[in-house]
Amino acid sequence: MGTATARRSFVDISRVRRNHERRNLIVSGRPKRGTLTSELSRSNCKSMDRPTAKRTNAQPDEAPKQMPQAFFPDVATVHFALEAGRIGVWSWDIATDAVTWSSNIESMIGLAPETFGGTFSRFTKDVHDEDRGRVLEAVKAAMRTGDPYEVRFRFAPRPGRAEIWIQAAGTIITKDGAPVRMIGLCHEVTDQVNLQEELRSRAKQQEALAQLGERALLETDIERLFNDVVATVAITLPVDFVKVIELLPGGNDLLLRAGFGWQSDFIGSIVMTKEQDDYATHILESIVPVVTEDFANEKRFTVPQYLRNHRCVSGMSTVITAHDGRAYGVLGVCTKAPRRFSLQDISFLAAVANLVAGAIHRRQLEQRHELLIRELRHRSGNLFSQLLALLSQTARNSRNMDELISKYQARVLALANAHRLITEAGWKSTSLAELLRVVLGPYLERTDAVGPDVDLDPDPTFSLSAALHELAANAIKYGSLSRPQGRLDLSWSVARTRSGVTLTFDWVERNGPPARRPRRTGFGSRLIALVIERQMNGEVHSNYTREGFSTRLIVPLAHERWPTEDSDVPSPTKNA
Image (cartoon, rainbow, N blue to C red; front, side):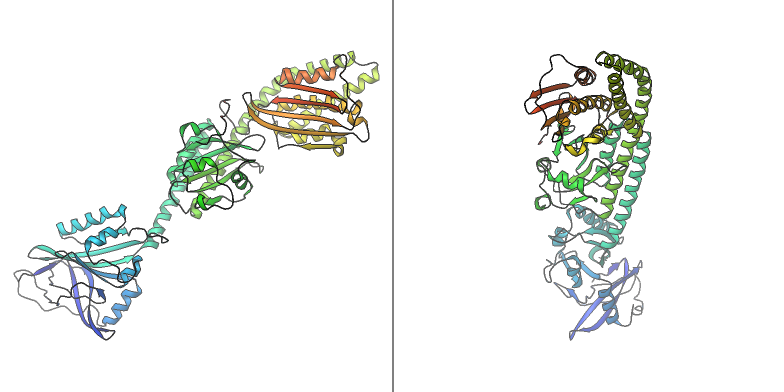
């Protein structure tokens, strides 16, 4: 009968009594070349065969030598140590394909007791699809070279259970130079693998943030930066879809400014509105990132159509917040497969959103400085011209010096107030609501104002300030504000048109005297037409009825909340 060659030394520890039954336990030690053994006995194992142990410890063509001392004198202690360390023992008979393993392995990998098929073929079917090839290659290499077998792999995922990682090591037993059996140990290393993966992921995310931060400081093209952001986030997390969404002026429409994974014609379209999508409202009003593991089971909001059309399953979104607390927009990611985002993933997305907000703010500051230089040069030349024109026109329509002084002072004061609003804000956007408070200060209690938060650039601020001042002066002198019971209704909205972002402003006087169309156009009406129609390329529609005077101002706004390199008009909402 031939001898069996082992690449590792094994100790046969017999006569273990458990449950009143005598069993054998094999414990693998460190590799020791040249030792020999035959069929090995097994203890506490699910076994299809139980060969009789024959112990031989001789080199080929040499006389038998004395058997080594026992590996550990107390077999019961070894057994409990293996159980406590969640270490399993296994053996594979290559000829019969039979696999024997200790009973604790089934619970280790999440199998029900007595459910293992007992063959190597069945074992390989239970290995994760992505790891099966690596396991088979490691086994073939061990059988071909006789070197120790060692591999780390996952078992196929099971419903409701997280992935389980196993580290297995073994040695080949040969007979007449041919491999006949493989014996070894295995233990669960899921926590270790997860920790290593978390460390790698954190390092990868920190590197990505550092690169994006450097790019944000150097890149002058904001669109290129956005494209870098979505690509980097998609690769780093990784995810199927990334979106950078801009909240447009008016605070209602959300435009997909940059994206990864979406259909090509989807970029540049309005994907959500706060009026119709409570998902947008939920994100913008949340102080923490909004995470969804399964959109199909989401109860907090209605899932937008564009996410359903792209078959998004999981996702998370966070607000891109300006330094003053305003919402610039949203940064979000989605996946086609179920995904449980970790706290580390959420923190990474929030950090990228802060980086994007900083880049937007920096570019706005740069554009503001450029605008300031141009405006100072432009305004210094025009200011005196405006004052002279106001004086000339006011004098032409005044009956005496006192009326001239009163009207001229009021109109110059309106310009001064507009200048004050803009300069106090650092020559940046001015709130329409704040402008109304300045113009209608003494009459705010008699004014009802309804409309979204709208920020105006310096040019629209100057023009609207002049127009609103003339409307207010006319209402105080001739209209509803000339009567104690008179009221003023103001409303406005912002929408995207072929002309770009457009402000529609309605001025309606109530409980005042009937309004009559004047026989000749006064300077105030001409001034309104001048600043709205000629300077801003807008429209003025006035009505004179028995209920009072009303007018609608339609004003194109050059203002963009985010910097942009072009003036393309976004396409309507798409459900692609």
